[in-house]
Amino acid sequence: MSELRWTDDHCHLHLRGDGGGSDVDLADHVDEAFVAQAVADAREVGVERMITVGCDVADSTAAIAAARRHPELFATAGVHPHEAKQGVDGLEELLADPEIVAVGECGLDFHYDFSPRDAQREVFAAQIALAKAHDLALVIHTREAWPDTFDILDAEGAPERTVFHCFTGGAAEARRCLDLGAHLSISGIVTFKTATDIREATAICPPERLLVETDSPYLAPVPHRGKRNAPALLPLVGAMVAEVQGRTVADVARTTWDAATELYRLP
Image (tube, rainbow, N blue to C red; front, top):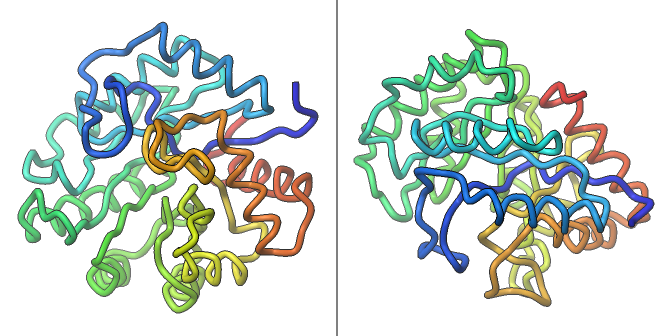
């Protein structure tokens, strides 16, 4: 067992499927054996808390079911921009569940455009309002949509507790996020050789505003890139953050644990 304590603030443990990337299907049920093993493996390396993230109403329900079975897990409920064409009907009913610690992931994805952009904007704005109405953190996904993302947040007002998950911008975008009062969540992409912009953004992020995530089963860090990701690989992300910021790994574990506790109001 590791002496360090980590929080994986964004993963998808309730997903089914055998591999990473777009081949992993959204769940309509929880693979309990897989979740139990993933949680056990994570605990072995000090990952004691994991936030499993919903991407539509059915998926969020599955996230809640997983969290109910494991004290190490907490859930979010949201509608991903890919699913924005579904709207948000049924989402608010999930937000009162005690396992829920945030709204999301939600936002804009203009890379794939799986939902019309107008629908993405509308559903993103609706979830900002829900986060504020229910006093929950907001988990943002943005890809190739920074100007629109900032415009909507400026218009709607960013919730007091907001995180840009799997941050993929550079230093300029990081400063805009930080000016909004938001946190940055750094994924395994920070370990990729080509991720210079993300490392530059990581370097300027105050420790108290920085979190670490796996986004598993996606985006496994080097040297596991291309394989299925898991919360047990989170310490590799933390180690790269420590290297970039010139800190010890133990300090990164401590500050990211504290940041996640505050952002999500975790016990």
